[in-house]
Image (cartoon, rainbow, N blue to C red):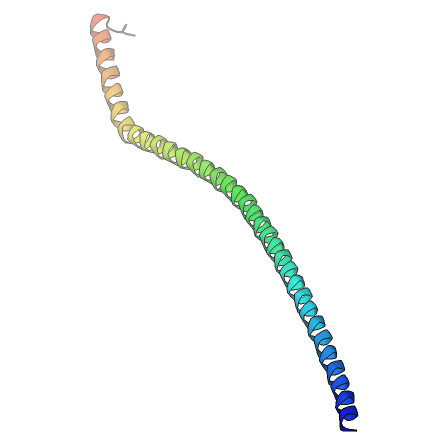
Length: 129
């Protein structure tokens, strides 16, 4: 009976060992599938992140281009306004100079006119009435 029991138990142990080997093989296969899935998910995540980064860079380029055009437009407008302000101040300065000297010129013209009138009177005295 010992031999028979031993043989029976050896058979059972072999069955358990076979079962462990099958479970071990299944675990190895499952671990490989999990690794493959994780690798695929990682690749997809890399692709998605790259696409997202490219999209963000494209959007930023577009927005910066718009901002640059607006800044250039504002800069041109400010230069035009500065030119107008500067030419306006020069015109005001000329008018101020003119107004400051116009009275002196008017007096000078009056003096010259009076002098000419006297000279004409000397040449041709007015008729006495």
